Image (tube, rainbow, N blue to C red; front, top):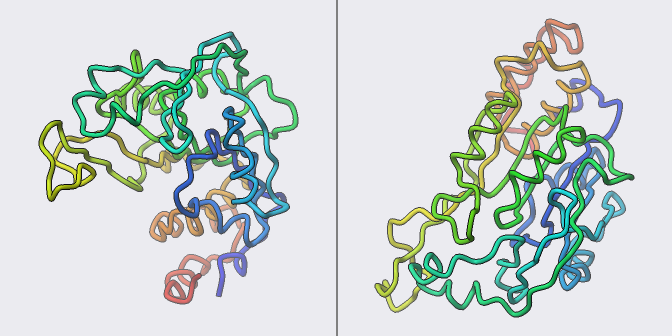
Length: 282
């Protein structure tokens, strides 16, 4: 039994990955592409990353865009080694880089260029977003503020949040959390918590072995499940699909299926069928 034995989707989920080159393993939305119920718009401002990005996504459900997303104005871009993942619209904070082992090298700026950024609201050819993923080295908050039209009905957001900023004037986890809660999003799960060792202490002769200092996390926010009545029928179905395939949050999926049954979108026994067959799910 699969979740789509219970209901059908009218349209594909629209997924947006900003800073798409920051992929170390299969992204959590990949299953949605593989089973052909999602379309990905992959945005990467650093042209050096585009070829590798296209090689990674050998899939006709992906559209590529070369933009530096921000507020639509001109800004400096601080280009670091492509493998470091630290190229940013924010200037690396030298004092913070020096605090952690290895980051003075990771955050070494190779070149500074001025670019005309683009706001998410301005981009044509991208439909309103159902699931947003971002890893953009501090630009997440500004991108969301300048993309509220595209994100008006967004169901879930995965982003990197910082506890100990590595860039000057970088928004912190608290800034992002306050903004998203005002938009009726709540934290759902942490995908990864990154700690790092403080210089000059090195554990096991490997500076990548972490100490206790929190650095950053990948976190998922979801539309407030206590406000399901505000969602359309189609949004509920898409939410169930994301929750099941991407987050594997089966208890939340049951909660959504119960609401769908109240609207007669699924059979009244759908949530119990789901629970009974959970071990069979892909």
